[in-house]
Amino acid sequence: MIHRLFREERESYVLGLLRVGFAALLLLMTLRRARELLLWGYFGDVFHMPLWPEYLVPSRDGYAALLGFQALGCLLALGGVLARPALFGAAGCGLFCLLCDRLQYHNNRYELLLLSLLVAVTPCDRSFLAFRRPRLGAAPRWAATAVGAQVSIVYLASGLGKLLDPDWRGGAVLLLRFALARPFVDRFLPASTMSLLSAPWFAQVAAIGAISCELFLALGMWFRRTRPLALWLGVMFHLGIELSAHVELFSYCMLCGYLVFVTPELRERRLSWDTSRPLGRALATACRRLDLLARFRHESASEPSRALLVTWDRQERAHHGLGAWRELARALPPLFPLWLPLVVASWRLRPTPPTD
Image (cartoon, rainbow, N blue to C red; front, side, top):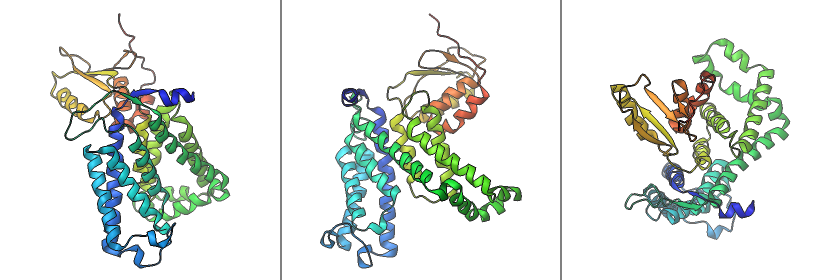
């Protein structure tokens, strides 16, 4: 298995999208640090706690220069110009600044920087390039596996930490967080909702559910049968976090990391729109633009059809009706939150076997 891990080669297209995503998030974090410098001043002029000798902490001008180099590296990585060294240098500058003051340390910032470093090690400079043609093809998979392992480690550490904490496990922590959400609940939701959120039993059930979800996410994404459900739960989990807590870019960082679990091979599915209808033509155009992962070979019906959309999976089985929309939602990231509801709504539908 170890031999396979280091020798396996898969398509490199998705790694370019992964690079673009982390470069964009790292650029946002850099701009926030620059804004803090302008509004609040330089951290080195006040109390700070470096993780190495003080003489390695840069001056105000040096810190501003580091932020500038970091932003430049992010922009180059976004455009695909010297993409790998640019992303590696930007993440390296961020880690250096993080070690200059442990008071600025947050797990979400460290996770973003670490994942960016790992992505920079992958052959992520073969697609999404600004000034040259992409060089797609098979590439070693081990570095991408390391990115996925780091994503799983976050969920495993978080889930086990909460499981071992009696306050978290018993619901006391969530009960406090539900209380903080009271102004929003009182304003937009019925009074019965706050009564439910104030119940200790509900907080304990929610805590057990959150812990189980994180432990499932840590392992479920590695197995083909459980991967779609694990990814869907992860998306909904982080959407819930964004609505209920302020965690900077953490949720976006983890969602971007999910791309490493996408099957890297391209255009293994097909779809066909009835473009004789104006709606079909509009949806066909939108679908091509949303297919960032290059999941489908896009076709048009040769003649008017009763079905607006037909999709074919990797086994060349045809899906119609809600089944076709289910397969579409599974493959297009913007529609992915709709996947599980469509699975439930279309569970009786069976695909048409491939014809010889």
